[in-house]
Amino acid sequence: MNSMLSPLDAPQDAGPIRLLAHNSTVAAEDLRVRLVLAADFQGRIEVDASEVESVGQAVLQLLIAARIDAEQNGMPFEILNPSRAFVERVTACCLADAIGLATEKDVFQ
Image: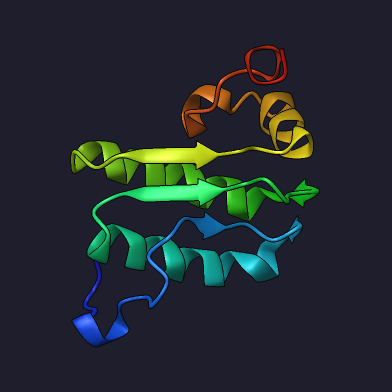
């Protein structure tokens, strides 16, 4: 996910990337930018999915791509506090392994 960003583009808040409640294709472009900034300037990618009520295909694809890129570059990638809706959607799409998420059974015991 490397890009041609300068330190002036670095995010002011170096905390986790917070997903919106509703993550549609429209939200995907902003997420892409935030994932690139995290990879370039933080050296890790942490995504807070605690407020997610719905998540679309484009956002799921970005998360998978970010995880693959992070792994290839030896960078930590983690989904933090996934909401039940996030876990259910990821599990229903059979993407838990691809996103690096424990199964619903593991998360909500």
